[in-house]
Image 1 (cartoon, helix red, strand yellow):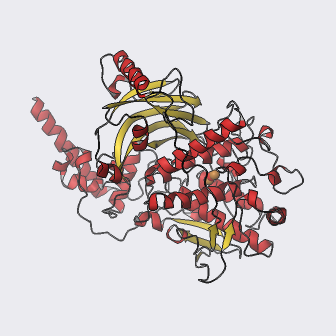
Image 2: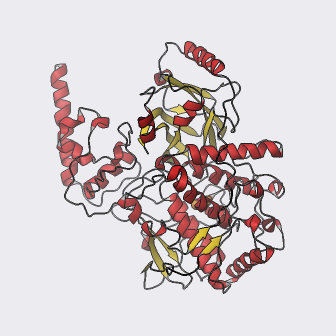
Image 3: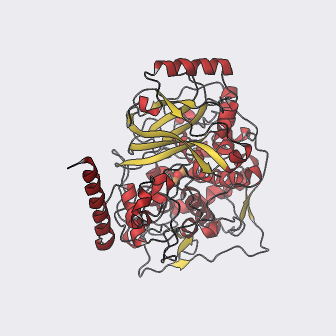
Length: 602
Ligand code: C2O
């Protein structure tokens, strides 16, 4: 066969296979592990949702799984232009089929636990029989007083006594009462460790509300029902769960009530070294060296600035797009990595295999500090949305808005909620007390001068033989030691307008992550590999942290916004940036598939 006929043959075979797949696919077909395949199937079953606004796709964004792949085969010639060039295909007929995630509550199963787990794998809540589900309607009355969630360091003991009382009552309720404290904690376990499957035909895909756009809204609803249940149990429906403001200077210690052994807020499975007045490390990892209090405070503030202010696009801050038929954990958001995961770890017992209870999701909500921790996370979501005069989240995306969860309410009814109804906290009857935010201007400075950085970069590039970009390093790359990679920027010197519209994002594909282990690696740009900068410096751009989920291996992606970083490092005119990955915990337990610079619409 000549080369030409071989190409022709391969092409016809491809077309025949695609035709076969799209016409004869049995609906019961099951699969477990390829992302694009699940998207293909999802597109096949619900070929709709060609939102003009395709949330995670910028022209350079290789999230081809969000493109209508079926549309691709209908016009096979487009395929030759490469996946990046496909313009959205015309709207298809089934516009109304939702591709929103909704757990199949009737088919809850055992969860996946890390090895040496200290509980049984049963987290499914008791279901009413017959199964009766109410749709959420309990919006706050327009003129009713709002519940005001305050920082713990600004509420008095009397107020904290209400929280203590509520938790004590919940702990005393019988096991078969869904308001029982452990039953509530299991709700977190079931949504985090794969207790719920997606609905057919995707029953082999387990739902996970972490590492995706479900992270903030799921936890908002979870805390909402916890608060309502607690308020009703103490006879104070206006009670608001106070928040642990670890991002404010006064809040950077474990709140003292939680450390009092006589309180219902006390919990045994916590790191005894981290009791007050020890200052929290928002970039913590097990075994981290401690530093002086002042240094820790300034690390924390600069770190908050990075995770909140610099993370200025929805994908980077909130996590990746996750629809019906998708694999779980598409991409993890900045604050979810840290401080969210890191504070979980900081509280848990460093000497237990998964840092139970707070350090791993199946047990985290058994520690009462989980709730004020997450109230603060919920507050930060609101603050992020308000930065820069209003930031764009996913609220134009119907599938996000339609995504559903189920919770028991204070009347013991099983209630179905969606993300749409969670967006305005006033409609849910609560707001956050506003007070000064100390990290808003804590912009990190570079550790070295421009001259020093450029000299470092030049000598690194000279050592790469021949001078190529990412091909100089073999991917997939098992991250078992520090590694630096030259990454080409597709655009240099963008205009002001371009910068306003699109964020430059460093996209790190994680192709193999051991989900049962604690993993953390830091990411640096134009730094010195031998003397890496600390978290308060501009060269330290982010950290990937993983809280053990289950036994499986997973894929996900990690994104860091770098427009501002490159400005700070005076590297905007450079064609190449040097990206250093430094494994901190779990060396060798993560493989990197690629490192790229992409431009993502804000
Ligand atoms: Cu669902 Cu703090 O975790």
